[in-house]
Image (cartoon, rainbow, N blue to C red; front, side, top):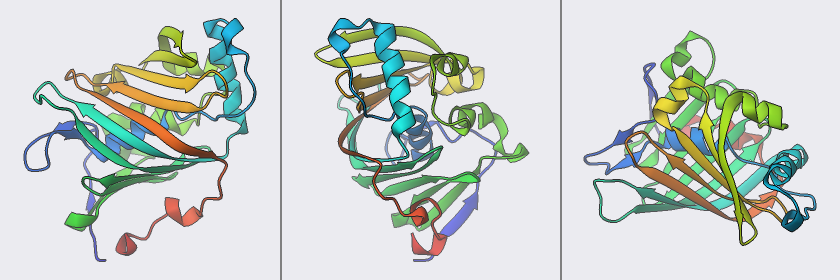
Length: 243
């Protein structure tokens, strides 16, 4: 399939859109937000007797076991302008330290691929692809947001706290939720708060919920997750004509 490639400007790829495409956050933004907070999931935990800080430390330690990860997701987008939320489904693949492929399958197929050089966003029905550089001066105003991915996943509390303010933590029914605020001013202009929920038993990622500056939210719920599956490198380095 031939695909038109558009080199984007330095404007941030995360912004709500309306009109013929409907009200939604662009897939580039979804991909950036999602992969900034994917944890590993393995190991044993005795969460019931541990305090919130110990649970958070266990989650951070569990990430060191993860090299690849894949899961199905259901995405729910709420906007003040709509009485009913928008939903989408798809699949995500990840390879440490920071490559991913994020596919929205329904209702509108869209693929976002992140590798060391760039973020690519494909719109198969439109036969269109967009490029967002991840290095050099071309990264522009959204460089701080992309930096949430560049250093890989936080492996310690100090690394996490270097990027985020921890606003709150809570545990209920075996699920631990952490609310984070990006320290980067540029990142906060896009998403002032992110909530991560993971199981206290095995530290498996259950959901991420993103709050945007326009008052809208987006929640991703993950199912059928597989840790360290075999993932083909071509998933993260696609040929534009084949997408």
